[in-house]
Structure formats: structure tokens, C-alpha cells
Image (cartoon, rainbow, N blue to C red):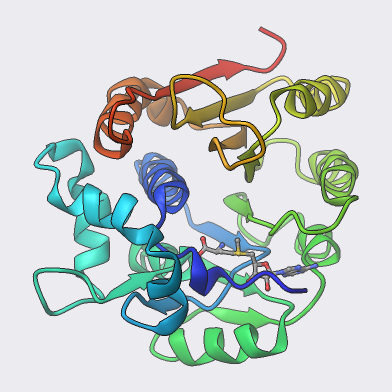
Length: 276
Ligand SMILES: C[S@@+](CC[C@H](N)C(=O)[O-])C[C@H]1O[C@@H](n2cnc3c(N)ncnc32)[C@H](O)[C@@H]1O
């Protein structure tokens, strides 16, 4: 387990992932029924953008700092959630997915977090001390299945692994198949990096075989042509996306694309149903 999210917190992938997570939860909260929010690979919960790791990569400059400087009102919910953990105009701290989700909780909702790395799990417990979240330290895939079905009828599972194991995609495919059998109507959000287009085509072909009816694929390509061997962007698989979320998605995607486009590139964000 070498991956440390503190090097990458607030990058362009985090902006898209966290903006869409907010939109999904808010769409579900249009109904009063309680939600259970489950984060299988939660990270540290809160990151210091002035810390050594974040400064070494400077990734937040091309992510959260661009979003914060963008006046598009469609980014307001995301920017307000970042500002909520900061006092200054320029954000010093970046909320990870656990702190974004914690801000969305209503009294009837539950937040259950998991992080396997001992240091990050310790940091996560500290970052969530003032919230009602439960924090576990288990293997994320085992935890994903163990939590389903949750006590509330509706909810969201967020799966955000580091992709450092060769079998990460195969584990996701197998665990998603089992999770969908246990909780067919549950919303599940799986993040993935976009590097090699051919690998993603193959993975999506495998996932299509699961026969999950409502399976949305959102992909953010940063550059106008593929850059070999580097991070080209990121995607989210969203199983059972709420209707209000899919209706509001096109203008939000365009706002994110425009805010995050690198110099000289337009970038592209697409949303397609797996299997048409
Ligand atoms: C991309 S980061 C999570 C970022 C976080 N979801 C966010 O958006 O703020 C992935 C995390 O998964 C943790 N991790 C790696 N392998 C894991 C496993 N098998 N089970 C649970 N967590 C794991 C890493 O320590 C890391 O903190």
C-alpha cells in the first residue's frame, strides 16, 4: 500500500468526483427517507494543501484552485463545501470524500467510512471526530459486501481505490457483481483513472456482461488527444444514478470541463449508459 492521497488531494479528478458525489446525494435527498453513505476507500478525510506532499506535486493548482476561481454558479455547492473547512480566501485545507459526505448529512442519514492504511485510518478518525461518522479499518472490498444491504432502504456506496494492484479492476468487477445481487437498487459510485483507452474498453466490456440495467459511465478527458503513459483524466461508474442527478448532469459536466481544461486544450466530459 504505497499510494498516499495527500500527494493528489484537490486535483482535477477530486474536483469532478466530489462535485458529482454532492450532486448525487443532493438528488437522493429530494426525498425525506434516510440514506446510508458508505465510503470503502476513504483516505484521510482532510488534507493540508500547504503540506510537503501536496506542495511537491502542486496538483491542487490544476484542480480545486481553478474551481474556486471560476465564477460559474454550477460549481457553487462544491466550492462552498471546500470553503466550509477553510477560513482564508484561498483554501489551505481540502476535504476528502468523507468530509464532503459529512457536510451533506441530515439528522436521519448515516455515514460509514473505511480506510485500510493504518496511518490514514488514524488521520481519518481524527478528521471525523466532530461528526457522527463510523470509521472502520478493513479491506475495502470485503467491507463493501459486508455493509450490504444497509439498514436504510436507500444509500450510496463510494468506491475509490488507488489502482496500485494488478487485480484491482478484476476485484471491482467481482465485488460489484456480488454487491448488486445483495442490493439491486442501491447507488454505487466507482472512480477510475483514464490512462490507456484500450484497457478501459476491455474493462467496460467485462462490466457490460454483469447485465446491470442502469449503469452510467462519466468520463473526463483532460486533453484533446491521448497523452501516452500519463494520466489523461478520470471516470466514474455510477450504478442506479438518481433521475434528478442525470437530468442536472449535462450543464454541471460542461462547467467542470471548462473550469479544469488545461492551457491549450478544451477537454471533454461524456456521460453514456453502458450498453447504450
Ligand atoms: C484515492 S484514495 C481515497 C480518496 C478519498 N476517497 C477521497 O476522495 O478523498 C484511496 C485510499 O484507499 C486506501 N486503500 C488502499 N487499498 C485499500 C484496501 N484494500 N481497502 C481499503 N482501503 C484501501 C489508500 O490507503 C487510500 O487512502
